[in-house]
Image 1: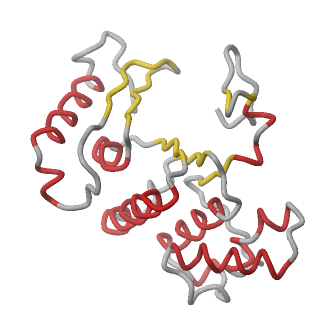
Image 2: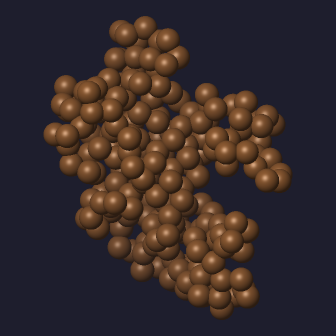
Length: 206
């Protein structure tokens, strides 16, 4: 989907153009955040802007704005090794958003952190999304994470779409009432049945 590996069939379009022609409009956040150890936090966030030859004053300004958005405005002069895993993921998110992408691709970005940090990052992402409304494609194997974050959950199995479920639980969803709502419980049960093969012969993983 990210256009980096040729497709066997079909195509992915962004604003009517193949994604391979629109990579400047795409941001990436990976499971391994991939920060450069020799660059401080501010310079890591500004990396995409530097690649686009934005002058230093402007890219530092934009990078600081995005560090503030993820709650790390005081950490710009630190280096990656001085940050926790959750903080590093927030730096990765700020880096991806700094180029104002139309689409943000996130590949299990919170899978390697502890449960409490994961919840904090989920809330942070949901809050930032409320402000930016950028389109996010988020890969996860966690049903609750999918429901918490998504407007639509697509269950995949063997590289095929098994089921698509609209998540019509009101936002914001970070309070206990949302997770205890009848609709949340209903969607969760439906997704788990699908993953266990109850709604399809194919089964599959999210």
